[in-house]
Length: 381
Image 1 (cartoon, one colour):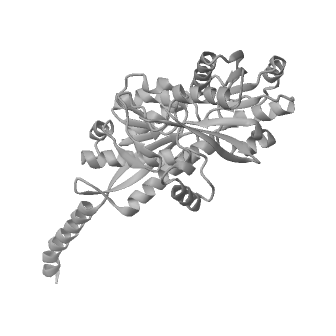
Image 2 (cartoon, one colour):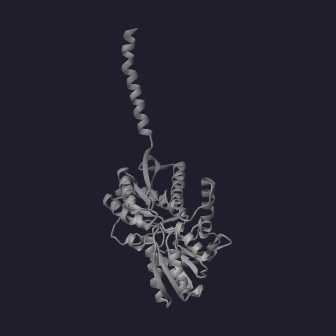
Image 3 (tube, one colour):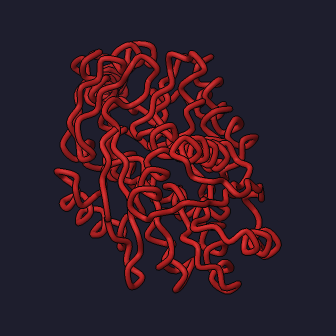
């Protein structure tokens, strides 16, 4: 009896070992794609919207099945919170590098994307921002830096042109929140406004944590401008518009995509009706796959998109498209294929110029009628 057991043990061990090897050989390779945006603070709802878009893409790709170079792949979203803070952005960027992500979709804010981009560049990892619009982001000479939206060099002029030609604005006051995004957008607007012959009455700065704008607005009320340009996010832009209304200012409040969200109607209340804002991309309702995407998003997450979710969704698919063309999940090989991207997704056709900017950008303009965000114009740049 003991002899038979002795003879069988090596055979059993061999069978178990072989089974383990077979399981290992058949196991999917886990590939991480990073996503970064503010998940805490005043812009957390926008960061979560971006994350949801990326998550939806990854869930779809995994459900369909992905094979690269003969190996089955399971994608994992490595989602991080930068709180829209430049210092925290660099910390989470380093964490994603240490986590060995193949690519990063993010950050949301220009003020976070710009400092983080140096870390991704040093690591040779592609970074595709779905929403950072400051031109400086792609003017640093990094080969890793891309975006899938238009820039403030397009958005600011579009706002100024619309104000002058459609709203008959002759005089304007400018306010920014002192961030890379808010200041950059306000400066681009001001430059074009002056070129169009608009009189810029003043340019004031606040900060992205401000809640009381009455001192600045009281000063502006004395200037009596036709419009006020606000460079910032909706968490401050909503109260800014509301306080302007409370002080009796009749000037239109102009702003960019940071303010131009579904949430603004709640943040500004009735004052949202006095806001005209731009977004650095095609309106969802004008996207070829926009209606279908919006329905999928709402079904999956239980609420409508804010705006940028389709861009994070497409950015994930662009990374996977590069992986397929590279036939590799190595970051350096994926990066090498990104520049040649020619991808048709929900947001339209994506190709990049030599800097990593989106070619053929589009600016959409909105106002808020009866608390509902409403498309009023689209400008192709």
